[in-house]
Amino acid sequence: MVDKCVLGLLLGLLPGFEPRYAAPLLIACYGAVGAAAAVAEAVALAAALSLLVDRLWGLLLHASRRLRPLSVLVARVEKARARASGLVERYEALGLALFVAVPLPVTGIYTGAAVALLLGLPRRASFAALAAGGVASVLLTSLLAGGARAVIGG
Image (cartoon, rainbow, N blue to C red; front, side, top):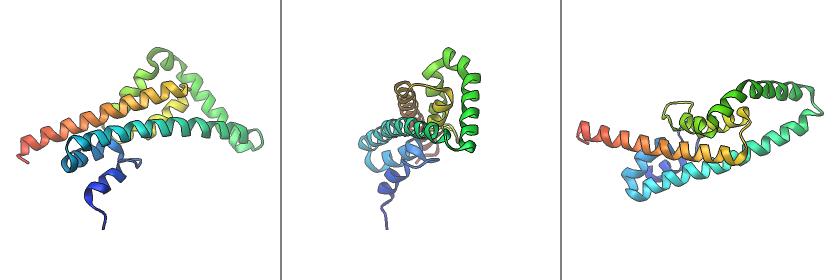
């Protein structure tokens, strides 16, 4: 049987759960070290996903030269990038960071990495936005969980 605290560490790396939802459990288990672990997970995910999305896009571009269905997909992504270029110019990485920071379903680091790809953000800007948004989201959910515990007397 896996310890609930270790499970919290593992769940923090999964899409849909991510470090922001693991943070309250990790803090309950490990205190300040748990908070640091959740922040470290957010930064690690941001680094891994910004690199992975960049590599996958390169592979997709290469494969699309030979496979027609992939070339259609690439064309659609490029069209979406063109439409979003005004948003990128206006809000750049800050908009993506704010999107990732909101602790709601489908606004996390994984979705943010896909949005960065669609917006055509450079890898460094993507990483910075994903990391900043991920850390902000961890802090928000930790504060909200602490406030809820204080209200209900936990």
